[in-house]
Structure formats: structure tokens, C-alpha cells
Image (cartoon, rainbow, N blue to C red; front, side, top):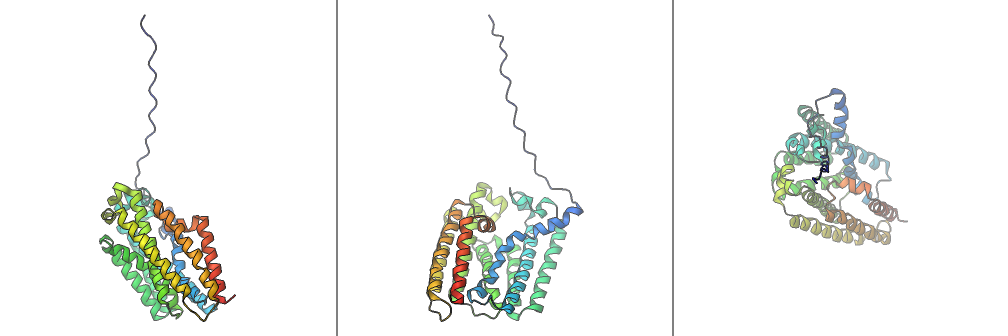
Amino acid sequence: MADTTAPPAPAPAPAAEAPWSIRPFSLPALPGGLIRNARPRQWVKNVLVVAAPGAAGMLTHAAVLRQTAIVFALFCAAASAIYFLNDAMDVAADRAHPQKRDRPIAAGIVPIPVAYLAAAVLACGALTGAVLLCNTATATALGCYLAMQILYCTGLKHVLVVDLAFVTSGFLLRAMIGGLACDIRLSQWFLITAGFGSLFMVGAKRYSELVMMGDQAAESRRLLASYSLSYLRFVWQASAAVAVLSYCLWALEPSGDGHPALRQITIAPFVFAILRYAVFADRGTSGAPEDVLLKDRPLLVLGVSWVALYGLAVVGL
């Protein structure tokens, strides 16, 4: 007898993901897009401007605190100008990146001419504010930051190793500018720690980007494919070691101010914070440093502990 059992119906095919496309321009969405593209979440990096005044124990002085707040605001404006410029110039590469394609310029929310205009207004405003509200050294440092980052955006980010140096210099200038604005002498160990600590984060960020993008790395960042994982791992590991060593030498340096024992104890939270951040670097998940710093609770606890201990050491308790 013939088998009349009907064959099982094929399983329905999964719904295809809607293709990504550029959104049509909408004027009501423009202000929100401009704010998003200024990347206020990344302004946490600019907190580095308090590093030098804080290390010198000067943040309790009203004049120093006011000047530091001004420099923070000016650096936020300058950094946002560079974000607008970089995203406008990298719009094609960003549209090939799974996360960056949702940035306002890549998505079409902010037109490219408007992005260039915003970059010019913010950069000129920051530089003018530095000239009018700060000293010559501060204006010069901010001008150097803008010039170097413009050079980076317009071509040097495609030069091997030079791109790491230019991004690192941005962090280092953040750490220096607070001291320059308040006429505070910058320790050599402070500069070495800030410099190699910055290189540690930049190397970890590039390493994570390469891990995440894999074979598609060149589509998002052309130079990224020229690096190897082993090289970038060497960069962030070596710079972390130098940063830890220089901080230890800084904390152990004889000083007539504050409480030397407490200052030495700050080595512990500093070292463990580096080790904690290195966990994310090793996993390839530190592509967005601000997310790591703000969302990881143990890292936040270590940061607060370091600030508390160093603050007590500075005031001499």
C-alpha cells in the first residue's frame, strides 16, 4: 500500500534583518543629532584636566577650582570639534562599521556641511575662550591639541604608529593643561605616568577594535589592518608596566607636603585599577574606554579609593 503520509512542511525561514540605510534628513532631529555627535559621554576623558591641580593639592583653592572648570569646558568644546571633523571625514568608513554607522553623521541625521560648520564654531570658540579667559600657556596647549588632532584627522591617522602617538598626545595634553592653567609645576614622574597611562588605554582600544572587527578591520579603519594583535598587545602591556613603575617612583618620591605614607598606599588602588582595566583589554572589550570606566563597579571602587587616599595624603591627614 502506498504511503500517503504528507512530508513535513519546511520550517519557515527566519525573517531577514532589515538592511541598514541612511535616514532622510529631518530638521527636528538635527539638534539631538548635534548633541549626540558632540559625544558628551566621552567628556569623562576631559576630567584629566584636574589631574595636575589635584596632584598638587590645589583644588581646595577657589581660584584654581574656577580655572580648572573653565579649562574643562574649553577642552570639551575642542574635543567635540574634533569629533565632528573626524566623523565628517570618516563617514564612508563609519557606515561600514556595525556600531559607528549609527552615529548621527553616518546615519544622515547631521548633514556633512553642518558637521564641518559645527567643528569650526566649536574649535574657534574654544581657542578664543582660552585666549580671553586663560593664560598664554593654556591657549598654546589647547591650540597644539587642535592642530595635532586636525593633522591626525586629515591624514596622519593613516600612518603606522604615528596614529597611536597623536591620540596619546591628546590625553597627555589633557593631563598637562590643568597645571598650565593654574601655574602649577608638573613633576617629571607625573608626565611619564600620564603619558604611558594614556598609551596603555590607546593601545588597548586599538587592540579591542581589531579583535572586534577581525577580517573587516580595514573597512572601518584602514590602518587597523596593518597592525597585528601581538603588536598591539605588546604596546598596551609595555605601556602599562612603565605607567605602574613611574607612578610608584612618583608616589615614593620624597616630598615635604602632605602625608607620605598615605601617598605611598595609593600605589595599591592604582596598580589594581591598571590590572582590572587590563582584563577588559585582554578580552578585547575596551574599545570604548568611557564605558569601561563608568560601568565597571570594581574599577569605580578602585578609582574612588585612589581619589580618597590621595586627597587625604595631600591635605596631610
